[in-house]
Amino acid sequence: MLYLLRVSVPDRPGALGLLAGAIGSAGGDITAVDVVEREASSAIDDILIETADAASAAGILSTVSALAGVVIETWQPYTEGDQLHDGLDIVNGLGSTSARALSAITRIAPAVLRAHWVVVIDDVSGGVATTHASAGAPWGRWAVLPWLPLASARSIQADPSWLPHEWGADPQLAAAPIGDSPMTLLAIRPTGPRFRRAEIARLANLAAVAALASHSMLSIAGAGAERPTAGSGSPYRPRS
Image (cartoon, rainbow, N blue to C red):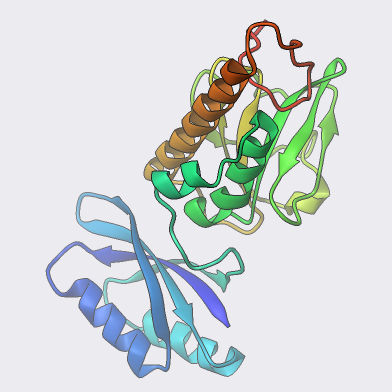
Protein backbone atom coordinates (compact mmCIF):
# COMPACT_ATOMS: atom_id res chain seq x y z
CA MET A 1 0.00 0.00 0.00
CA LEU A 2 1.34 3.42 -0.97
CA TYR A 3 0.54 6.46 1.18
CA LEU A 4 1.18 10.17 0.73
CA LEU A 5 2.41 11.94 3.85
CA ARG A 6 2.57 15.72 3.67
CA VAL A 7 4.27 17.15 6.74
CA SER A 8 5.68 20.36 8.08
CA VAL A 9 9.17 19.63 9.44
CA PRO A 10 11.42 22.02 11.40
CA ASP A 11 13.89 23.55 8.95
CA ARG A 12 17.04 22.51 10.78
CA PRO A 13 19.80 19.97 10.11
CA GLY A 14 18.82 16.40 10.88
CA ALA A 15 15.07 17.00 11.19
CA LEU A 16 14.16 15.14 8.00
CA GLY A 17 16.57 12.34 8.90
CA LEU A 18 14.85 11.86 12.27
CA LEU A 19 11.48 11.71 10.52
CA ALA A 20 12.75 9.18 7.99
CA GLY A 21 14.22 7.06 10.78
CA ALA A 22 10.92 7.07 12.66
CA ILE A 23 9.04 6.00 9.52
CA GLY A 24 11.51 3.18 8.94
CA SER A 25 11.33 1.97 12.55
CA ALA A 26 7.54 1.82 12.26
CA GLY A 27 7.77 -0.41 9.18
CA GLY A 28 7.46 2.11 6.36
CA ASP A 29 9.58 2.14 3.21
CA ILE A 30 10.12 5.66 1.80
CA THR A 31 9.98 5.60 -2.02
CA ALA A 32 10.13 9.33 -2.79
CA VAL A 33 10.63 12.67 -1.04
CA ASP A 34 9.71 16.03 -2.55
CA VAL A 35 10.30 19.40 -0.88
CA VAL A 36 7.08 21.24 -1.70
CA GLU A 37 7.77 24.59 -0.06
CA ARG A 38 9.97 26.28 2.53
CA GLU A 39 8.56 28.61 5.17
CA ALA A 40 10.26 30.82 7.75
CA SER A 41 11.21 28.03 10.14
CA SER A 42 9.90 24.86 8.51
CA ALA A 43 9.78 22.91 5.28
CA ILE A 44 6.71 21.28 3.73
CA ASP A 45 7.61 17.83 2.41
CA ASP A 46 5.70 15.20 0.45
CA ILE A 47 6.85 11.71 1.39
CA LEU A 48 5.59 8.61 -0.40
CA ILE A 49 5.63 5.61 1.91
CA GLU A 50 5.09 1.98 1.04
CA THR A 51 3.51 -0.10 3.81
CA ALA A 52 2.74 -3.79 4.20
CA ASP A 53 -0.90 -3.32 5.19
CA ALA A 54 -3.41 -1.02 6.89
CA ALA A 55 -2.18 -1.95 10.37
CA SER A 56 1.36 -0.95 9.45
CA ALA A 57 0.05 2.32 8.01
CA ALA A 58 -1.77 3.07 11.26
CA GLY A 59 1.45 2.44 13.20
CA ILE A 60 3.42 4.82 10.98
CA LEU A 61 0.80 7.53 11.40
CA SER A 62 0.86 7.13 15.18
CA THR A 63 4.66 7.27 15.27
CA VAL A 64 4.90 10.39 13.10
CA SER A 65 2.13 12.11 15.06
CA ALA A 66 4.17 11.76 18.23
CA LEU A 67 7.28 13.49 16.85
CA ALA A 68 8.00 16.91 18.34
CA GLY A 69 7.78 19.78 15.84
CA VAL A 70 6.31 17.64 13.05
CA VAL A 71 2.84 18.66 11.85
CA ILE A 72 0.90 16.28 9.60
CA GLU A 73 -1.05 18.03 6.86
CA THR A 74 -2.11 14.95 4.89
CA TRP A 75 -1.98 11.19 5.31
CA GLN A 76 -3.89 9.33 2.63
CA PRO A 77 -3.68 6.37 0.23
CA TYR A 78 -1.92 7.39 -2.96
CA THR A 79 -2.65 5.90 -6.38
CA GLU A 80 -1.11 8.43 -8.78
CA GLY A 81 2.29 6.72 -9.05
CA ASP A 82 5.54 7.31 -7.20
CA GLN A 83 7.68 8.89 -9.91
CA LEU A 84 8.34 12.57 -10.50
CA HIS A 85 8.70 13.70 -14.09
CA ASP A 86 10.90 16.47 -15.38
CA GLY A 87 10.37 18.61 -18.47
CA LEU A 88 12.17 16.22 -20.81
CA ASP A 89 9.97 13.31 -19.72
CA ILE A 90 6.93 15.40 -20.54
CA VAL A 91 8.17 16.59 -23.93
CA ASN A 92 9.14 13.04 -24.96
CA GLY A 93 5.60 11.86 -24.26
CA LEU A 94 3.70 14.61 -26.04
CA GLY A 95 3.05 12.80 -29.31
CA SER A 96 2.70 14.23 -32.79
CA THR A 97 -0.58 16.17 -32.65
CA SER A 98 -2.08 18.89 -30.50
CA ALA A 99 -4.74 16.53 -29.11
CA ARG A 100 -2.08 13.96 -28.23
CA ALA A 101 0.03 16.63 -26.55
CA LEU A 102 -2.85 17.60 -24.27
CA SER A 103 -3.71 13.97 -23.58
CA ALA A 104 -0.07 13.37 -22.61
CA ILE A 105 -0.09 16.36 -20.25
CA THR A 106 -3.20 15.11 -18.45
CA ARG A 107 -1.71 11.62 -18.25
CA ILE A 108 1.58 12.81 -16.75
CA ALA A 109 0.37 15.74 -14.63
CA PRO A 110 -1.24 13.81 -11.73
CA ALA A 111 2.15 12.35 -10.73
CA VAL A 112 3.93 15.68 -11.21
CA LEU A 113 1.36 17.61 -9.16
CA ARG A 114 0.38 14.93 -6.64
CA ALA A 115 -3.20 15.44 -7.86
CA HIS A 116 -5.90 12.80 -8.13
CA TRP A 117 -7.18 14.17 -11.45
CA VAL A 118 -6.07 16.71 -14.03
CA VAL A 119 -8.37 17.94 -16.80
CA VAL A 120 -8.37 20.44 -19.65
CA ILE A 121 -11.40 22.72 -19.86
CA ASP A 122 -12.22 24.54 -23.11
CA ASP A 123 -14.96 26.62 -24.73
CA VAL A 124 -17.49 24.24 -26.30
CA SER A 125 -20.74 25.20 -28.07
CA GLY A 126 -21.48 28.32 -26.09
CA GLY A 127 -20.39 26.86 -22.76
CA VAL A 128 -17.32 25.23 -21.25
CA ALA A 129 -16.55 21.53 -20.90
CA THR A 130 -13.85 19.00 -20.15
CA THR A 131 -12.07 18.08 -23.38
CA HIS A 132 -9.13 16.03 -22.03
CA ALA A 133 -8.81 14.22 -18.72
CA SER A 134 -6.52 11.94 -16.75
CA ALA A 135 -7.58 8.36 -16.06
CA GLY A 136 -10.79 8.08 -14.07
CA ALA A 137 -11.46 11.82 -13.95
CA PRO A 138 -15.17 12.78 -14.03
CA TRP A 139 -16.02 14.81 -17.12
CA GLY A 140 -18.01 18.02 -16.76
CA ARG A 141 -19.95 20.59 -18.75
CA TRP A 142 -21.13 24.03 -17.61
CA ALA A 143 -22.90 27.04 -19.09
CA VAL A 144 -20.25 29.23 -17.40
CA LEU A 145 -17.58 28.91 -14.73
CA PRO A 146 -17.36 32.03 -12.55
CA TRP A 147 -13.55 31.86 -12.22
CA LEU A 148 -12.89 31.85 -15.97
CA PRO A 149 -11.02 33.29 -17.78
CA LEU A 150 -7.82 33.16 -15.73
CA ALA A 151 -5.08 35.76 -15.97
CA SER A 152 -2.56 33.47 -14.25
CA ALA A 153 -2.26 30.20 -12.35
CA ARG A 154 -3.94 30.19 -8.94
CA SER A 155 -5.94 28.11 -6.50
CA ILE A 156 -9.70 27.92 -7.12
CA GLN A 157 -12.33 28.15 -4.40
CA ALA A 158 -14.71 25.20 -4.61
CA ASP A 159 -18.34 26.32 -4.83
CA PRO A 160 -21.35 23.94 -4.75
CA SER A 161 -23.08 26.07 -7.39
CA TRP A 162 -20.81 24.63 -10.09
CA LEU A 163 -18.79 21.87 -8.39
CA PRO A 164 -19.53 18.33 -9.67
CA HIS A 165 -20.27 16.10 -6.68
CA GLU A 166 -17.82 13.51 -8.05
CA TRP A 167 -14.96 15.90 -7.26
CA GLY A 168 -15.58 15.59 -3.53
CA ALA A 169 -17.41 17.54 -0.84
CA ASP A 170 -14.57 20.01 -0.25
CA PRO A 171 -11.84 19.44 -2.85
CA GLN A 172 -8.66 21.45 -3.34
CA LEU A 173 -8.39 22.92 -6.83
CA ALA A 174 -5.77 24.82 -8.82
CA ALA A 175 -5.88 25.99 -12.42
CA ALA A 176 -3.65 27.63 -15.03
CA PRO A 177 -4.42 29.15 -18.44
CA ILE A 178 -2.95 27.31 -21.43
CA GLY A 179 -1.19 30.01 -23.43
CA ASP A 180 -3.43 32.65 -24.98
CA SER A 181 -6.22 30.17 -25.63
CA PRO A 182 -9.51 29.81 -23.72
CA MET A 183 -8.23 26.45 -22.48
CA THR A 184 -7.44 25.84 -18.82
CA LEU A 185 -5.46 23.13 -17.06
CA LEU A 186 -7.24 22.19 -13.81
CA ALA A 187 -5.85 19.96 -11.05
CA ILE A 188 -8.17 18.36 -8.49
CA ARG A 189 -7.48 16.84 -5.06
CA PRO A 190 -10.80 15.51 -3.71
CA THR A 191 -9.49 15.24 -0.13
CA GLY A 192 -6.57 17.70 -0.11
CA PRO A 193 -3.99 18.80 0.70
CA ARG A 194 -4.26 22.38 -0.49
CA PHE A 195 -2.10 23.51 -3.38
CA ARG A 196 0.87 25.57 -2.24
CA ARG A 197 2.64 28.31 -4.16
CA ALA A 198 5.40 26.06 -5.48
CA GLU A 199 2.83 23.54 -6.73
CA ILE A 200 0.82 26.23 -8.47
CA ALA A 201 4.03 27.37 -10.15
CA ARG A 202 4.60 23.77 -11.27
CA LEU A 203 1.06 23.68 -12.67
CA ALA A 204 1.76 26.92 -14.57
CA ASN A 205 4.89 25.33 -16.05
CA LEU A 206 2.90 22.32 -17.23
CA ALA A 207 0.32 24.61 -18.84
CA ALA A 208 3.14 26.48 -20.60
CA VAL A 209 4.59 23.21 -21.92
CA ALA A 210 1.12 22.24 -23.18
CA ALA A 211 0.69 25.60 -24.91
CA LEU A 212 4.10 25.51 -26.58
CA ALA A 213 3.74 21.90 -27.70
CA SER A 214 0.25 22.39 -29.11
CA HIS A 215 1.31 25.59 -30.87
CA SER A 216 4.23 23.75 -32.49
CA MET A 217 1.94 20.97 -33.69
CA LEU A 218 -0.41 23.51 -35.27
CA SER A 219 2.47 25.35 -36.92
CA ILE A 220 3.75 22.13 -38.47
CA ALA A 221 0.32 21.54 -40.01
CA GLY A 222 0.88 24.61 -42.20
CA ALA A 223 -0.91 27.85 -42.87
CA GLY A 224 -3.42 26.18 -45.16
CA ALA A 225 -4.70 23.78 -42.52
CA GLU A 226 -8.30 24.04 -41.41
CA ARG A 227 -8.73 26.28 -38.40
CA PRO A 228 -9.50 24.23 -35.27
CA THR A 229 -12.97 24.41 -33.79
CA ALA A 230 -13.92 25.01 -30.18
CA GLY A 231 -13.43 21.98 -28.03
CA SER A 232 -10.89 20.41 -30.38
CA GLY A 233 -8.16 20.77 -27.76
CA SER A 234 -6.15 23.12 -29.99
CA PRO A 235 -4.96 26.32 -28.31
CA TYR A 236 -4.09 29.75 -29.61
CA ARG A 237 -7.57 30.94 -30.40
CA PRO A 238 -7.68 34.48 -28.97
CA ARG A 239 -9.60 35.00 -25.76
CA SER A 240 -12.71 37.10 -26.14
